[in-house]
Image (cartoon, rainbow, N blue to C red; front, side):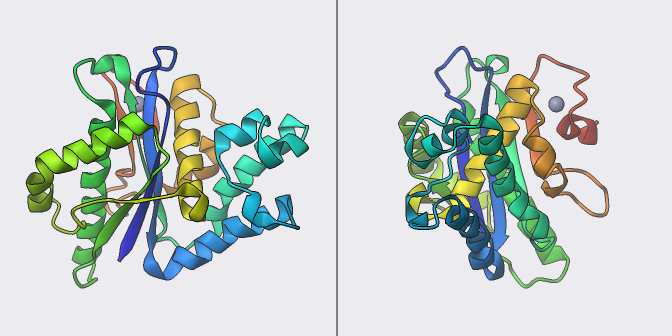
Length: 251
Ligand SMILES: [Zn+2]
């Protein structure tokens, strides 16, 4: 079983933001506890007396206005924490991979970016599982786990899609459990890591800021034979010759 932990970043409704991003980390069941423990260790360093109060949300860490982040006055130190959370992936096995879809909202005014990103990532996760099957794993299965505290509207959109098109999903995404599971991010360090991945990709596309993206660039799911990066998707219609890794790899 592989779990794909997903979180979103960017408001669908906010015209000041160009992008909506859905992203996260795909973890084989044998690595779930290990990965979660790596993030927990950072929480123990941030608040040794009570690591349970530390919930990693990249934008809150960056802002430094709430909770334990108020006690870390230097922005450079808070940025270092966001990067450290992302860099737990450096020591993970190669079958821990990441996925993200960045949707340029104005390119698709008639479409729901949440649904678009979710469809993209579901089918890419399915493709990943099919590759696992082709390489000899016997019928690998996938489960998608989504942060419950994502924007309420996004969540409603997602559940509506599943109610409306549940059969369609079930019929073509054979390897993925039909309905995603929603969890409270405070209870899952792996969802908190997904939050950081979505944030890193959002910053890359929305602001051209590679600070966080550079920490994870090598982890996107990639077909070892063709070299195509399947794990990163840039959905846009405004830049025909985009040179981002997602667009280049498909040209
Ligand atoms: Zn691109």
